[in-house]
Image (cartoon, rainbow, N blue to C red; front, side, top):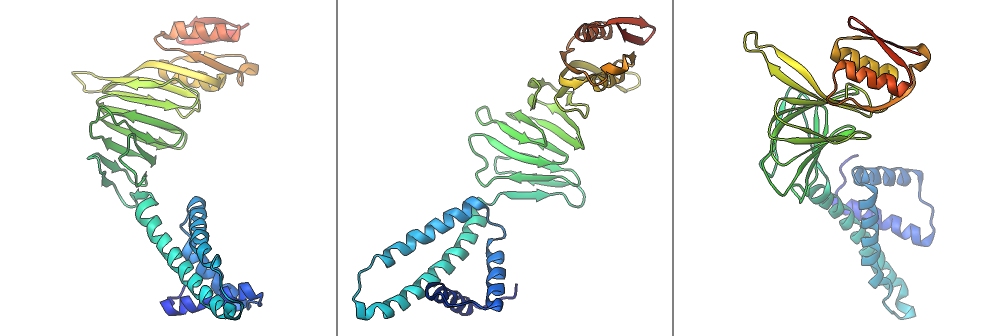
Amino acid sequence: MKSIKYKNIEAFVFKLWQREISGGKISKKETRVLEEWQMYIEKDLDRIHMKESKERVLLTLEPYFMTTVKKNHISGVRSQLYKIAAVIILLISLGGVFTYYTFFKPDVYSATSGNRKVHLADGSVITLLSGAELTVEKSFPAETRIVKLKGDAIFSVAKSKIHPFIVQAEGFSTKVLGTVFKISQSGMNKTVDLYEGKVAVSSAGTPVSYLTPHQTWTNFGLERTAAIIAFTTKKKSGKQIPELLSLSFNDVALKEVAEVLQKNYEIKILYPEEAAEKKITADFTGGSADENMESLAFILGLEVHKENHTYTLKK
């Protein structure tokens, strides 16, 4: 929108206000300018803020319309009221935008080209990896320190025994009191890698998972699935060996459950084709491959036969 001087804006609003009261027709050009101006002013305001702004306008104008005047002075007073109302609307609209941006609009940090470090008011430092976006409310830090994350980031959270730090990611959240961890989100695949301290990870339909250093929470790219993997480093080769500590499914198709079990236990699972979509709810935490396959067969009402590293489920 082209820049309009203050006096021109005031005159324009006043003119439209008079026509609104008198019922006069507004030209197409005036309507277009009004719509452009309204979009310019309101484009970043949410519905709640707009509702509050309108209520403040009505509350401010009410005393003027309650004033008692003589009949022969009505037209003169009305003209003054129009002018006052136009100025009030203009000031409140512009002031509302300033107030919203200053005190209410969340701060959004984006890593558009390469990594970006963000220092929060509580002393926490977040490293946004390329393409990530962090949203922080103006009220941060409050009783509970909450931020929202899209993409991948490494968090170094300032310690506080009474103010939890919660990262709301896409479909899951991570809660800590002070620690260093990494959140990764690639499509449906979600992971939390813990380097220091402790964290609690929660996602819809799964129990809360508690991590200690050098452990990873993941959903293997499946909804209502949660697992904790521990990594140990071999002294000679320095290679990290993963160990599945816990694994739970809540209403997940057998074909997806089997895929996860095959990958993590390095086994092959054969099952009846008609059972592929059957929903499985199970907790395989602490069991060996043999024990977990026995549990899976029991849930399906099938028998399990093992030959080398192949498990066959059949009636």
